[in-house]
Image 1 (cartoon, each protein chain N blue to C red):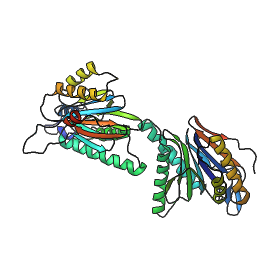
Image 2: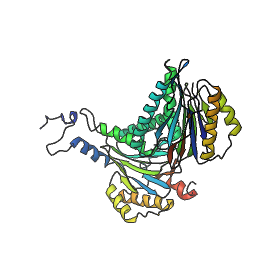
Image 3: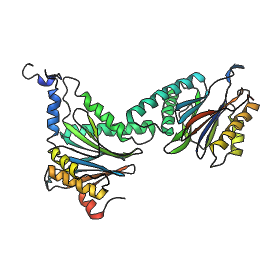
Length: 196
Length: 228
């Protein structure tokens, strides 16, 4: 359940999510956070088992900070994605997988980057991507609207519309949209306004 | 006073707060043939003289590749240097396994420094009789580092280790210029090296720039020019 979206733009990245947590057929929570900052210019959007995802994100946040202290400069987006995927992979291989899919997005010295890490530990480098039960609907809008060289302002609008589209048809997604924009300058949550 | 012959089994302070075994190890590293490194704008270089050539023996290498972007040269016991180079290579590959990217120089020297430091904390081990110069290029920039027998890290614009390295350092102190180009840096490093130890044997040159490290012999560099 969930719809999350990440788009790589010319001047940064955009992450968007719905706010619903499902408990079986029930809506478990109507105001869940699914986008987590890793540092000032990186964030992870989560889908799947909330507890697994939270555990991994907290671990990677701590690990990233330690590495940055030791070597004196922050991790790249790819390195964050790899740290996550290493844990996902060992989970899968040890018959206790982390039931989650993560979109890692941010801006580093290489530029804006979006990666997807799935339950098996596979990492893919994407221009735009979506995950969760609403992703088929979100992809429909993304495939039609995405082009290279989007600004984050345009990207944020597309990401918001993609999540909204999924919320219209996917019972696992709903209760509002949250959007985060990350540029060279830093990250901020946009006020996506009104629940759909 | 320790009983005779048991000195090596202890790693304990003297009454005036020194660790003599570590100081002896530092002394051993001072007998190794010197290595000089210089960092300029956009590059880092190091030079070291190989052993006197013997027609019966293959020449021994003094500068060791660690990964495609980092090289190490050591002064001191050859076995200890080899142990550290092996350790560095494993660390570099481990980093690649975790991140799918080459290791950065800072992380590598931190780990090597920690490794060497451990030998100063326990009895029944011998502190490594080797100091190292590590140069490399990563996405942060180009670096030169020196690691001494205690595991102490030094970085800077120009460094020297090994026999008579004080002479090399004082020459570098007088002649180093921040805007030095690569050719001049190599020449200055060779001059500093020769001021520390005269020799006829071939000089090896390590060049780090643009995320890569290359090892050449000085003759190659002088004859065919610098690698682009």
